[in-house]
Image (cartoon, rainbow, N blue to C red; front, side):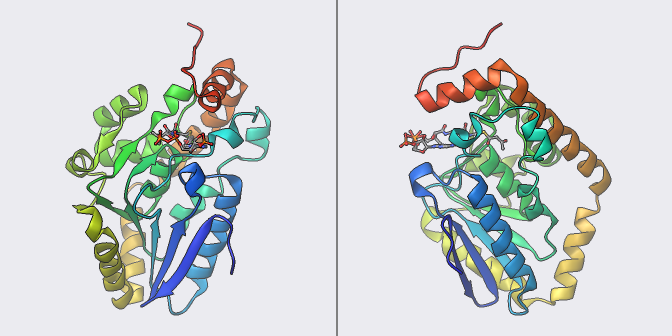
Length: 256
Ligand code: CAA
């Protein structure tokens, strides 16, 4: 299948999905969400694919949800459309998904990586939830998944200040499974995916399901709450100012 925003490949039992909007640093727009959903549906159905690998290449993973697309959105349209809910389908997949991250994984890009079962990061990887600087909040699970992985203090600091952390700090605080030199990211990630794909598919999928049971109920409730808050922030003048400022390449001026 031909995609506008993705490159896909199948090798050695691995469904390889590469985000491919280099002109926008792989920013996640509606087309990308739809195509990712279609590509993952294919991988889930394929009898030959045992593991899925999502990457953005070696320059950037994804610089967030597409701010240019989002800047004119309003409430209650965000609520009525259940904006971004389709992205969270990544986390509901049954086959294992590895994220191979190089460069920036910010906002929705970081949230996409957090939906995967684990992250392998290159030394140049940078992670952050800078939504607060745009006058909005994370809306694809960032507050919930980061707090669970990195703990409350780190999640509070990163989301309230928008501070971006490097790969070493991300590994120290439990956000990434491994950090490797950039030149080895592809080979190491493919080897890990290949190992998963060659194990008992039943055992692998059962282990994933068991670990996801750890706090499934509480996570689902937290995700729903975060998404509703995210939808309603589109009723504020801060969202309009923050996102227009990004598009205009200036610093946002929020009212006190
Ligand atoms: N949405 C849309 N376009 C984006 C984008 C985004 N999230 N991030 C970058 N781009 C675009 C830029 O506008 C620019 O386009 P033009 O060439 O047309 O001007 C192009 O990608 C290259 O970007 P920069 O010139 O900014 O590249 P840089 O190397 O100087 O900076 C960066 C890189 C630090 C990642 C910077 O681009 C950046 O800060 N991006 C935005 C990060 C962000 O705020 N992400 C959160 C988005 S909100 C969100 O994700 C909500 C949610 O929870 C779902």
